[in-house]
Amino acid sequence: MNVNKAEIVISAVTKEQYPKTDLPEIALAGRSNVGKSSFINKLIDRKNLVRTSSKPGKTRTLNFYNINDMFYFVDVPGYGYAKVSRTEREKWGKMIESYLETREQLRAVILVLDIRHEPSREDVQMIEYLRYYEIPIIIIGTKMDKISKTRRHQYVQKMNHFLQDDSISIIPFSAITGENKQKVWNEIYKFINV
Image 1 (cartoon, one colour):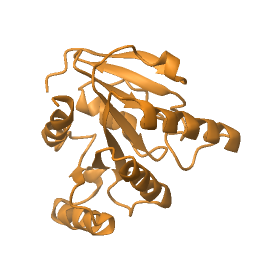
Image 2 (cartoon, helix red, strand yellow):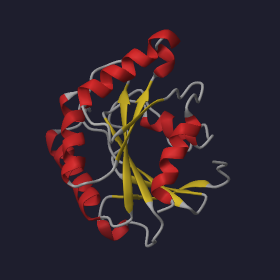
Image 3 (spheres, rainbow, N blue to C red):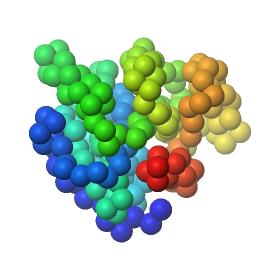
């Protein structure tokens, strides 16, 4: 996709703040510091639209990004390790659940995982949660460039075996080189053109 327009519309914490639109939405979820921000920036060919940080827990709101007036990416706070209080993490959890369970415009969730590691307990919980609510899942295996080309297939197979679900697409991705960017867009098109 040629992205001519990509802008943050609002950082929301309540339903009342969500954009008043019928445009489809694709949410992005993943552990703190897994590379969601770098993934989005590479996908839309922007260096700093989504702020990246080496510190976990940078995203603390639901950030709605308008892409070409066609759909929204909705970046949600990372789960797992973050240097914030338990109370704050629980607030994030409720905010995310409220969005995922009630937002009619939500078409799919891109779950960003580090392809080099087995999915964590929190990753598995997120997958089970999304399955329970019948929300389509696209899995992006980031940091693909850190694995030799000859071993990449092995890591994808390992993740497939772990998930045991052929209905979930697993796409290895590099935020450095942009490898498989078109495959990601092809998968997103299936949900935003419904």
